Image (cartoon, rainbow, N blue to C red; front, side, top):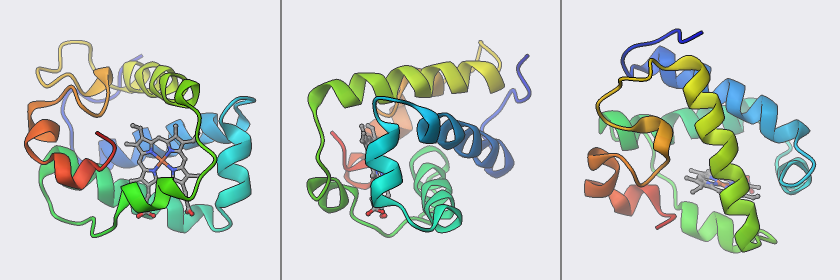
Length: 122
Ligand code: HEM
């Protein structure tokens, strides 16, 4: 049942919270996160700032996701898996008719594409 019909800071917080709750339990990508992240509260705050910067152009995120991911044992299949979980979670909490396609993933939003340097994943 969708809870939000617009992208706001509180909506992003719910999405990030739910998404990483799933990620942590996921048998494919969960182990990568559980091994790398020791402070989950901090990680969730960082990710809220990241998505706020991407979707609301708030400029709250100041990190370098590319560098962070270069240190991880990433495999191509992890990304499609990540994206499936992301779409599933966004679909649960956002109304289906959101114009900006948040649920389609990081690169689907016009605002995300115009600030690709802050999304870092390409
Ligand atoms: C396009 C998809 C993805 C996006 C947009 C994304 C975004 C991010 C961002 C913004 C951070 C925080 C960076 C910082 O600390 O400043 C992060 C951290 C992290 N990401 Fe991703 N990520 C993606 C895919 C993945 C995948 C597929 C994996 C592994 C399966 C992954 C594993 C991690 C881990 C382990 C961290 C924490 C690293 C640490 O704290 O040392 N990410 N991600």
